[in-house]
Image 1 (spheres, rainbow, N blue to C red):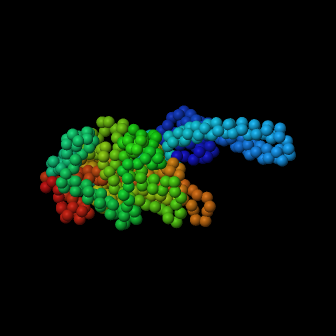
Image 2: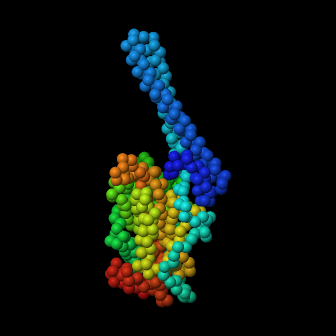
Length: 433
């Protein structure tokens, strides 16, 4: 959520930011005007409320003075005035709640403001490549997509998954199921032992407040799965970013404890609303998938440096696996709702003869912290500040599995197990052989 004080003082800058994100100038201007109008209405009402409260307090003192002076007529007049003010205040407090809600709803759907160095553009075609790592080999004529590799027949079952749950689910068996598990364990070990992240086991079902805190609600409700619970509902996490980031909600963290770095390996659940017809074959885009998430909680001064560090931690996974990849910075029109800046890491898939996203690392500034009321107290200062939050995939396990299968496939239909994963596979060097 954006700072209403900043919006009040910089309405033109917000309109410019929305246009950079792809909004029309008319839509941006009208949206900013609506937010400012709601803020002004709320502030004007609070001004009236304050005047009435001050008059009530003054009149209450005057009643005492009148009684001591024996002026009962004046005292009764003042009592009548105080009662009228109490009625007004009771009604005014209800109006205040309505105005608060109206302003909050207007702020809740505003995206974050991109940093100045984010390239401008409309979509992924305008993203800017930062670097390429690893050599992309010449694609052999026998290279196949992951779901076509002969040696995996029977180990990757879409038909049975469809009978169980419908489209966009997969059943993995035997060596392939173990390979996916090995990838997740390898990533966790790397991030905890070498990169300084603390492993956390988190709930997979969360309240609406948690989803609101990281920006999934209200804007992206259709992308989520919900289940009834205790007269309300709980949402299945679309990423462990949600519970990990919310670990600091409604808390004040001492500055010396920052940065906090968390990681978790969890299943993730997404309805994939709006993706009909995209990546329908194979397991590239699923309703349920595993991902290792990275979350950092920092102070305001450290967040951009932490963004570079987090990106490097995610890149390290692909380097250890020997997978070619490239890192791009997303343009303003392709960025996520809550991000100030995002790096996407795209792994090379020989079967598709293309780079595909395997990780997004984003710095959010205090956007999520305002929604969660997550603060820190700088050393030597009385006032608190909002923390800055970052999140990234370290990395998506299912997509890493696809990348390993396609990059390590052999002409005979088998797949070589990358050396770094063999200790997790009981020394196994090939699957599907």
